[in-house]
Length: 143
Image 1: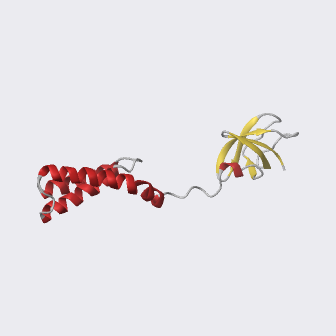
Image 2: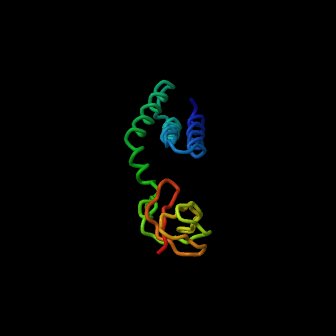
């Protein structure tokens, strides 16, 4: 194959990697295509069967050896406060909530469903203490 075909294949595979979410597989095949293209341009890659062999071996070795380290290096930091840290925080009632009833409360700038687990009714604007969280439901009582 001509060197420009390998370079085109490498660029196309890198573009596919950018266009698809997640896997981080096509990147290594794209880089291998570019490397083989450069080797062909320099006259070091040999006949077509050798070029395909180089491409395959480089791709698989790079994928096996470098995928996990590169993924961990590029990893996005997870949020600092996990959901488990919500119990004990203070929420704000967005509406009146009767004892045992479900209403809305604001916590960390987001509106949540809130169940009144306290002994008295909750009035809109009142500060609430979060007892626990089940799914997207806060169990609250008045402070």
